[in-house]
Image 1 (cartoon, rainbow, N blue to C red):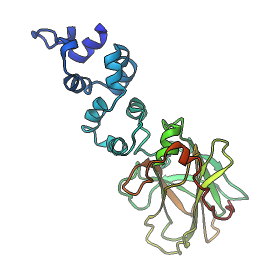
Image 2 (cartoon, rainbow, N blue to C red; image 1 turned 90 degrees about the vertical axis):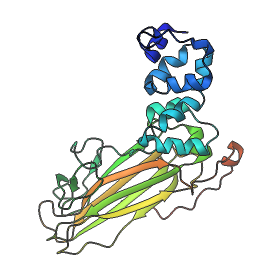
Image 3 (cartoon, one colour; image 1 turned 45 degrees about the vertical axis):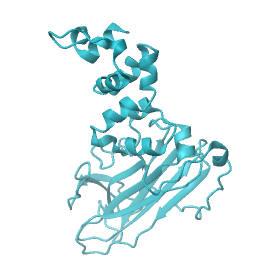
Image 4 (tube, one colour; image 1 turned 30 degrees about the vertical axis):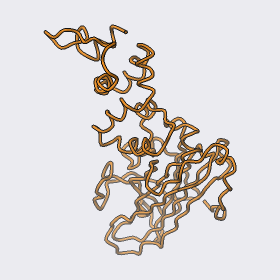
Length: 299
C-alpha cells in the first residue's frame, strides 16, 4: 500500500494519534470505502486509485462515490445518474461535476462580457451591464445585460466533452438538457426578446434539435419584473456534442441608450429526471430517428 495515501487517509502514520496503525489489508471493503469517502475527489482519482489493484477496483466502482455524494447536496444530480445508468465514469463525475450545474458562464454579467460572443448587427448602442431593476431570487448576481434600440445579440457555445461529459453518457442515456433565461424591461420603455438554443453534432453544423422562443413584447409602462423562458430537451437522439445558446433583445421606442430588454441568469443544466429517456443500447442509439426540426432561425 502507498505510505502517502495511507497517511492522508488516516493521519500521520495512517492512524489516529496514540492509536495502533490500521491493518489496511484486513479492512473490509465497506470500511475502507467509508474511510476513503472522506478524502477530496481529486485525491481519490489521482493518488488513491494508484495505490494498489484493490483500491483501484474500489474507486472504479460506485461505493466510495455514493457515500461521498450523499453528504453533499450539490451532487444530487450525480446520485440520480447512478440510479439510472449502468455504466458511469465515477471519478469523472466527482471531479468534473458536469451534472446539475449551470454550464453557461457569466450568466448575469458579473464579469462584463467574458465568455460571451457579442454581435450587434446594424446601428445601435449595443449591450450594457447594469444593476437589475427587480430582484430575481436564486440568481447568481443581481445584475443583467441591457440591450439597446436595435437588436443586440450574444451567444455562448458549450463544449460538452470539455465540460466533463462523455460520449456514452450523452448518446446512450441522453440526460435531460434544461435551458432557461430570464428577461424583462424598464418601467418606462417596452422591449422585445428572443431565445434560440440548438443541440449540435461534433462538426458544430448538424442540428440535432432546436428550441426557439419569441414571447410577446413587454409594453411600455410595466412593472420591470422578470419573465422566465425555459425548455427541456428530452429523447433528442445520439450525437450531441455542443450546445449553442443565443439570445437577443431591443426596445420598442427606439430610444438612444440602453432601454431595451434586460436578460440575466441564463442557464443550461444537464440532469436526469423521472421523464428522462430510458437508456438505449448502442446499436439502438445508432438507429434513433432524426428529430423534425423547426424552420431555420432568422437570427
